[in-house]
Amino acid sequence: MTNLAIAANGLRKTYPDKKGEKVVLDGVDLAVPEGSVFSLLGPNGAGKTTTVQILSTLIRADGGTVQVAGFDLDRQADDVRGAIGVTGQYSAVDKLLTGQENLLLMADLHHLSRKDGRSKAAELLERFDLVEAAGKPASTYSGGMQRRLDLAMTLVGDPRLIFLDEPTTGLDPRSRRAMYQIIRDLVTAGVTIFLTTQYLEEADELADQIALLDHGRLIAQGTSEELKRLIPGGHVSLRFTDDDSLKTALDTLGQGFLDPADDDRLTLQVPSDVGVASLRQLLTRLDTAGIEPADLSIHTPDLDDVFLTLTGQNTGQHTGQHTGQNTDQNAEAL
Image (cartoon, rainbow, N blue to C red; front, side):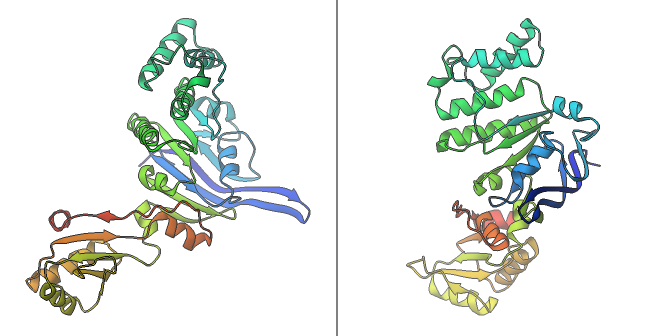
């Protein structure tokens, strides 16, 4: 049985307002496996920040039971704090200090000896590619370097679970990719990442499980692919080399339409849930009819489509991603 880094049942939080009380979290259940990336998504005001504040012991819940890193959140809050790290959207880096001094300060706060503190700082500077900048004020660092230093500071205490809020906000594509790799390396080492982000492609790229929070309730949860299959819009694109092959495929499948983006009018789009069973059936029917497309690609709704459909709000961060593979790769996979 998979051990859980976070197990929350019936999490509830209210705040007083002019009408009596505002329900911010209304019976939220979470199960986050150890050594995984769990992403919590939701529109502004959905309750994401409140959830993280409760799980990281900053505020108390009004109801529900929670275990974090195996400790009861109410009765063992100090043990929880010793097992977690929090890297917020806004950097905790002291820009007047050098990178090394920032890390040594964190080592002091974690009560490491002088020797162990220097050893840990040197290790993290090497790990995050900050050795050359170690003696420079953090104010001279680029945005990507500051985010790496911020995360390195979190790791001084060797947390088993890290709450990571908007880790790549403001970073250029290269720095964003570097941060993605750092997160993957942490998970490989057994660290659990609880990720909150407004970049849906970030959750798509990193998260093993995604939960969608809206008005204080979880409205969907699963892998990225499972969430995409919740809404219509998936299709398989089949490209052919000539009109006869395309017409025969259309007659065989009995459905489909020409791709308007293909000027050669040789690409057929077939509505599908793009699951393994339906893809196998489609390819079998084509093979029986003696038809082999020159190329096949799978198109599913992206997380932005899921977000918009389920919450009725647009994130403004449309990913526009799809999965494309050639026929041989798909046939091998099936």
